[in-house]
Amino acid sequence: MSAKRVGLAMVLVVGASLLSYSSAQGAIGATDSTQEAERWLCLVEKAAGFRFDSSAGEWKHAAFQASGKYLIIPESQERGQSIQYGVREVGESFSPLKCGGFEGNLLYCENKGILFPFLETFTFNKPTLRFIHTYTGSWLEEKSGGGGDTPFIELGRCSPL
Image 1 (cartoon, rainbow, N blue to C red):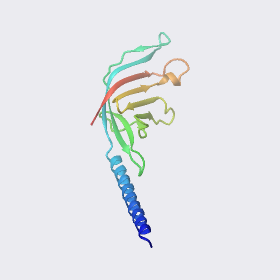
Image 2 (image 1 turned 180 degrees about the horizontal axis):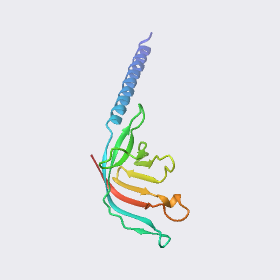
Image 3 (image 1 turned 45 degrees about the vertical axis):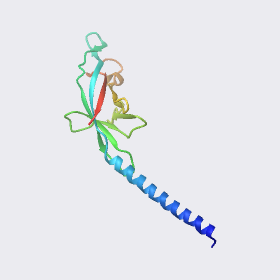
Image 4 (image 1 turned 90 degrees about the vertical axis):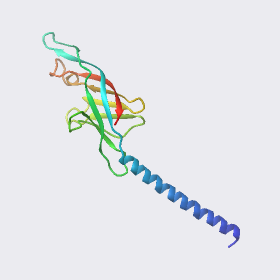
């Protein structure tokens, strides 16, 4: 074998080894980063909604206190997949709002109820740390009148924990 071919073979072997090592390190890093999921505390700053006034037979604006507090926390993780999150009220042990991984900067969450999974949503923007939480309630369920609940929208900001 000529010196030129031996040199080329050495370059290929060393290059392949470095590529293998680099790929393994990347995989290890990806696994480690998904295991250390981020968490946020989210505080409602503004809230508005509607209620059905049965005596007037119509929906009217409803007064809401902007006092809600939510946690965005990791719920589960499957090997090789991004972390799944859940949103729950502070003090609660169950997360009714389930989220996939981030889609770009946004985390989309919804109530995964059996009958009406679209009734409640929570969207979080990681760079701005802002969220919007909506509940459509009986507005979508009833053709006329109210179902005894009040559709609402909440706006707020989150802080990393």
